[in-house]
Length: 145
Length: 103
Picture 1 (tube, rainbow over the protein chains, first blue to last red):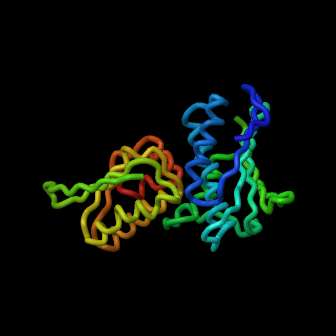
Picture 2 (cartoon, rainbow over the protein chains, first blue to last red):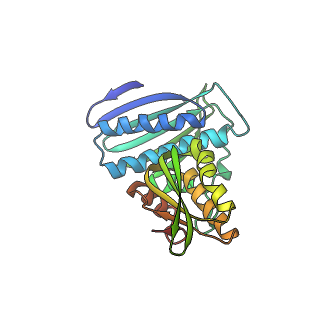
């Protein structure tokens, strides 16, 4: 884990993870550690952990679709400043086709398509950016705490 | 994730209870399906006990939906029991509390 800044009101920590589904539990552990430092209430903490895990899962599932194994790593950075939480994801997978990103209709009950819906429910904003070299994708989630 | 299976004889018939444990995410969905689906495929009424599941993401929710739909197809039912608070929040976020048979 790399700590960039850390105090009660201002924190920025990042960690890289191998891009695969087995890393998702490590992404959650890292997120919980950072949120514990921010002393977030348990319910909010678990909602944010879910949003982060869903975003990381989307990298594994979509940016690396049809890639069975990879040594690529993804980075999750959690920053908080002046009660604005910003969570950034960096990956080197396929470029995100922003126009194709949508969750399924919530009343169309079928498996799949809920991850993006959960992220939208939990976070205030979701912005997909082109990643700066060496990254391909940079997803930024924000929430006012 | 771990699980155990218990067959019970209840007044209305035989029931298979599947107790899941731990965290259910994309990495664990196949294990969860392997724990649940054979009993539904056999036409049994399945009770899925989630009291020891502390975390479930959209992949886990998909397993619940798929199991529920498979049970209907097979002419039986799946009842989701003793859902932990954290998992119930996710089920409610997915607006599935009226769809799944929760007890």
